[in-house]
Length: 482
Image (cartoon, rainbow, N blue to C red; front, side, top):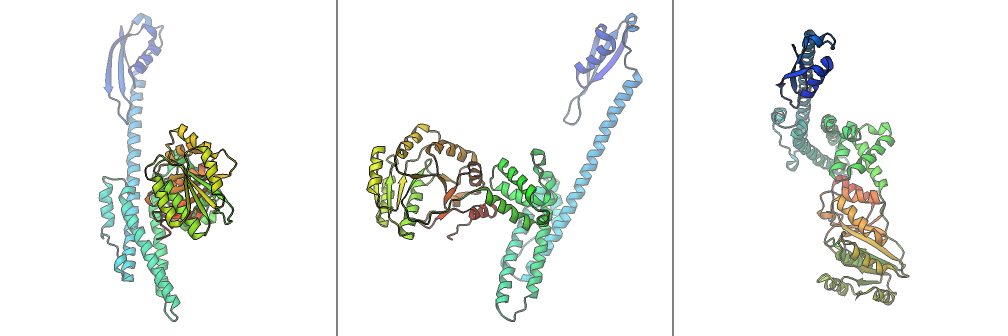
């Protein structure tokens, strides 16, 4: 009997090699684990088999010892090569990070100098002179993009403040005849250059963060606008589709700086949704507000009533179908009394038609409904009974801007049986991002009619526009009435 040794990443693999060499006559003598499997290296096992000498001449020749040695040596060489490449990549990354830190340090220093030059206490920026060293110290424990993010954000914010102040002073001096504005113009040009520098620094680490392995390759010059849109809460699939369209259609000459890219992307977003303008005629219109509980339907209806009666000087009537919520009728009666408009409560579909007939003298009839959960299809179907008449009723679905996109979509699907005409979004002032609103309008192709932007009646109800929604989405929400 002769003993032979075979290795493999698993015991079955080693045994298979032995059987290929000697057939089924090989007897397993021992199995050993030479190296445990790790995240970076496979395991290594050895199988010792015994083969009868008489059968050896007709069996396949075993792997020569020199070949086995060469195989192991080759494996070791491959491991060494991978380790060398890893070290080279790490060194390259360190060099890249150090370069980024140095550029950020220089940019911060220039911003500080410009801030001092303006001699304006409210825009002073306080950075340590050893910014690059501080970044490298953080980087030893934290990824580069996370380490630099607060500093870049602070610098960007200060740049924006400086730019506004310089622009304001420049305008003041231009309006005052004889004033020298060349110095301020020079400062403004320096601010513009610094802004481009910061954008470049932000984008230097984009390659590591870009979603190119997740379906779409985002060029670094689009990094800023993609990051802003993603942070707003736009659905990922929608954002990638829109970004692909932008990359396909945007002229190359517009990719020169972040400003033109942002402007173009803003226009693309505006064309993706539709906001229905408020009708200018005074023909009879019946508007029914539906939606889940707690989204502010009754308050939105009161704002609409005040808008039509006080601002448009139209005759308004109110019908409430909400006999479930305590205080709903009292709340509407309180508003109706102060606006001197008629209000009626209806308990059944047959009474609803009578109420509409009694208010036929009104220019606008507003119908309030009880809040229904999107999971209660039976109660939502009850509302549909009120819509089965000869009157043309515009049905508006009211939803809160604080609701996540997936839930907004479920609500829309549930209330879709009511043949919705428009969407109304409330509580924009309470939401951190408006990408969820954009995504729902983009996916459903349903127009938005109004935004409720605060608690004031009627001022905090505004007619929805594409421009306003996209501006709030990319720049942050600002109450137009404040």
